[in-house]
Figure 1 (cartoon, one colour):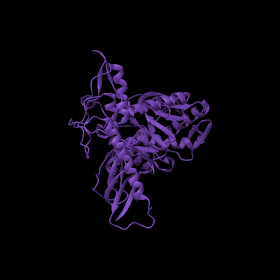
Figure 2 (spheres, one colour; figure 1 turned 30 degrees about the vertical axis):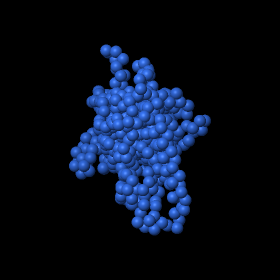
Figure 3 (cartoon, helix red, strand yellow; figure 1 turned 120 degrees about the vertical axis):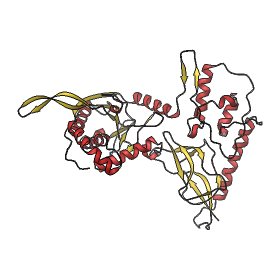
Figure 4 (spheres, helix red, strand yellow; figure 1 turned 180 degrees about the vertical axis):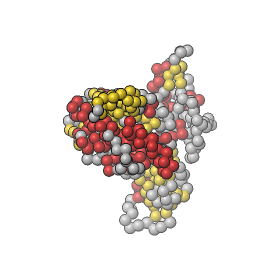
Length: 437
C-alpha cells in the first residue's frame, strides 16, 4: 500500500491560508480522482478542494474551522499501488506526530467543556464549543447565532463578534452554562437559521453583519484611509454602440445561448485606454509604484447574499470582444451560483463597476486597493443633445451616459486621470458599428 499526501493547493495571488469549513469524506471512505474532499473559505470566497489521487482516506490532519496554510498537508489517502522510492520515509512519523498533536488539542478542549447528554441538532467545532463554554453561552443561545460559514456554520469570528455585541446589549450572566454536547464524527446538516436580531427598544434593531460584509467594510475604510480619492466625470454619447448592441443581441443569444451586455464593450474600451495611459495600470507599495505589464480588469458582480464581489478578467487586452463577452458571462454565472474560486478574484490591476445597473446615472466609487483607479459607468439615458455636423449644429435624441473615475491622487494627477477618462469615453463614442461577433 502507498500513502499519498493531500496538500492545500495554491488558491491565487496573496492567498496564504484557508479555513476548512466542512469535510466531504470520512476516515475509511474511498475517494475518486478529482472528487471533492474538503470545502474551504478564504477571505472572500468558499470553494472546494478535490483529491489529486484516488484511494481510501486514512487520516485527517485538521478539523473543521482550522486554518491550513497553502502547501500544507491536510489529509492522507492510501492507494493500492506500492510506495514509490521517492516517497519520504518520514511520512508515517509525521502523520503520527500531527495526529498526536490533534489528540492533545482535543483532550485539552474536552477538559474545558462540561459534557453531559445535552444534544443540539447543529454542528459546532471544538474551538467554538470551547469559547462558548468559557463565555457561559448556553446551548439554546448558541443555536440562535447566525453563522457566516458554509451552511450557516459558526466560525471563530462569528462567536467572538456575538460575544462582543452580547456584552454591550445585556448584563453578564452568572448562571451555570448548559453543557454543550461533544460533536459526532459526521457533522449533521444544520437547520437554516434566521438572522440574529438583538432588539434595543421598540423602534430599533441590531442586525449583525455577515463575514463578507465585515470584510468589505474593513477594505473600504482602509482604502479611504490609504488613498486621497479624487473623482472626475465625463459624459459620453454612446448612441452608436447602443444601436449596434440592439442589432446583434437577439442573434447572439440564439447562436451562443447567452446574452451580450454592455460590460464587455466597457472593458474593451478600458483596456485600450490603459495601453494609451499605462500609468493608470499601477499599484502602490509604501513609496514604490509597481507598473503592471498584464491588464487584469475586475468587474463588480452581485452575490446571492446581496454583497458585491470583484471577479477578474485576466489579460483582458489579449482578448477580442467575443472572448471578453464569454469570460464576463462565465464569471457572472459563477458569482450568482457562489462558485467563484479564490483565483477568480485575485490579481486585478483595474476595476470597473456598473452603477447604471441600479438605475444610477453616476457614482463616486472607492478604489479597490492596492489599485489606483476605479471606473464607474452610469445608466444610459435618452437625452436631447447638440450634434455637430459639417452643415452646422443640430439638436437630436441621443443615448448618453456618465463615466466617473476615482483615482489615487498620490500617484495619479488630474491630468492623467482626466485624460484617461476622456480616452475611455472616446473609444465608446467611436465604437465600430461594423464589428462582427
